[in-house]
Length: 314
Image (cartoon, rainbow, N blue to C red; front, side):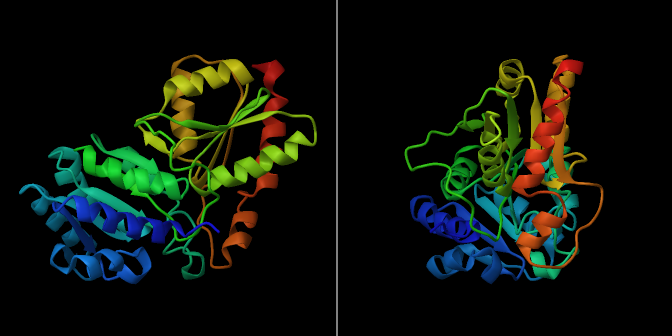
């Protein structure tokens, strides 16, 4: 059974913390939720609980980065990308300090805490900051790789995580590349470009459509910025329709990033976007929220059918 992404992340911190003594971890008094408590227990001298003070936490991380530390900054994505934004912009974006912002409970995965704790705009916020790289963990293996990549790449970066377990997409031998998406299922009639939890839902949608004789390619676009323009354009040429799927607002997120690539390349293919529609969600069970806000496999399949019908008009 797949592990929760947050647990995989905590275990990866411990694993790489044994290898690299420059790793330091900061948390805003929610280490039981982010699972950075695993690192705290293993390396208490390298763990800093700053309390519920997200801006201070991010500024402290920047200070640690100036003396050669690699700071992983942790709290719920909704707070990290808003309350922690000013120092992220000043010290990460402008000064290019290698702070690693780890957005826990991305999307609606903090389901029962409601809209104040959901993050449906974090990707849009962070990809607009110069010099920041932006990633979304797609499963346990990619989560582990993203922690390793954060250690090796000196860029400031935002990595969106989740509370929940995701479908396993990769095995331990998978090779990941910065700025490159992965085709997790090939197809010829349309391409669904997804990230995070929505990759699993897109694979389920592809199964539904296979029963209708429609072949769907599914891409895990875990690297939002830089984005894999080459794969997007080749998929547009080869399948003739692009659909994006994200647990995020359709404004400014993955769908917007893909639209930018296609429009600037003058790729004449229909584009459909699955995401939340310029609104906040509400409190409730996670599967019910996914269903209500149009992110289910059935909703993705419906968007694929709608988009394919536009092929002749492109």
